[in-house]
Image (tube, rainbow, N blue to C red; front, side, top):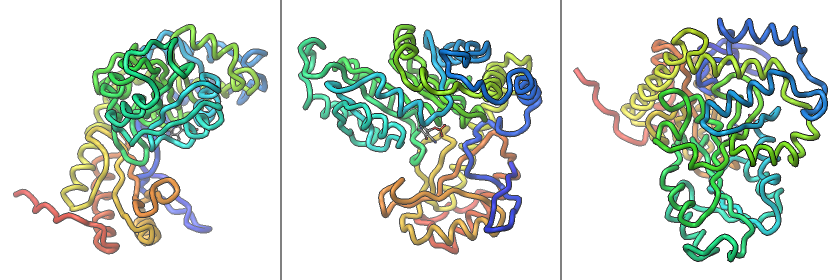
Length: 391
Ligand code: PMP
């Protein structure tokens, strides 16, 4: 997967190891692109209207039905921006008198939505179901009926794959705690939907969780589907409630029709409804690519965070002072990587965040590994002894 990366005023073709283009749909596609062009001609780039006025086309309704079917919930609602999907929906679901319990590493859009909601916010230690239970127990007694609790409602918010950690959510354990204390679960699948699970249905499918056990499923179209926008999938009642009350539905211009068409087409490819098995091949490829790249980095002696099957793999740099040399040297050798530091991570936990795509070829991955290995030696970030090559 080759992209253009800008180096001051110049532009250089690079191997892109930093994009969220997990399934490769953010490039011309034989099924998606002609349909997107048709939708552009038919509907224009914008509806210039909110959903409840003239902003709902047949495509918007089709996408909502398709998303609900894809993620396994009864209904869905879509928005023009993933960030807004969290920051506007959380306040529409909960307010003063409610309690949000949020994973300590949740994305900024969740943090903003939670703060803006007026609900009380408590944070539990990252991906730690026992600490979630401790926090819940401080607030309510086990088995206390909802009507006798000090909170109107409690929502626990987690992510499917944590984008700075590459880590899968401990969803089955978190759901068990939520059920025990009768709290609602809200799952952000921005990085997991389309990217993991045998048929791309995200962390629920990968970990064997019944989508009925997650109350609110959120996701974005900006990663696996190569488009923009976001969705909420939930019960018919919750979706109907959001359609009647959520300001981002009532007062914001609806999702751009070609962007809607891109997501519809990408989901159809993933489901094999385009009449090919390209979707299944992409899913097998991203898994194979991710597991290959992760294990090769580990063999080289890097400290790599995250779980198998996750296409997100942070390489620890620790000292933020290593960031300029690491990214500059990679770019000099035509490999574009994203580096992350404070405030997105704690001060001394800087990292390079690699994102693997189904559209990377084996040659791309080998080129990336060779460059990262050389730069790793130069910058001094191989913290473990390298594994000797097998003969
Ligand atoms: N949730 C998570 C977990 C994210 O990582 C992001 C952005 N990468 C968003 C929400 C916001 O999505 P978007 O970029 O599509 O607005």
